[in-house]
Length: 112
Ligand code: 5GP
Ligand code: ZN
Image (tube, rainbow, N blue to C red):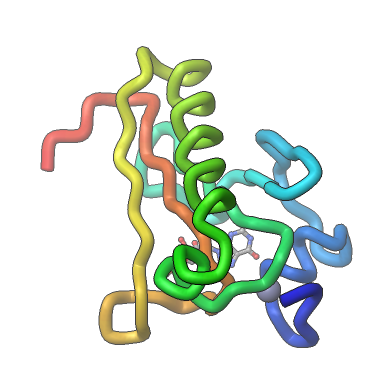
């Protein structure tokens, strides 16, 4: 937990690497994905480092619930409240950054 050396998203949260902020509060930061897969593609992350959603759920379930609230709020603002929420978990599922992040895909009808 805390800030992890060599973690890309800890560096983004700390402001050491620039990002396009969408939302922030004391525990949570949201920013635009650099390679968007939908009209609106936002990553929502806890400020505290946890490797994946299972570790976050075990360590801090309220934080996980808050990430869902933030995702809903982003979709309410960007669209009419509909969104896809994805947590890639493990390298073989496509996880490339091992600081838990919710992909929020919204801003358009998602056909598949
Ligand atoms: P994963 O594949 O781990 O589920 O998702 C990592 C996401 O982080 C990818 O969608 C990728 O486009 C995004 N990403 C990787 N590096 C950066 C970066 O430096 N800035 C931003 N904003 N997004 C990034
Ligand atoms: Zn981290």
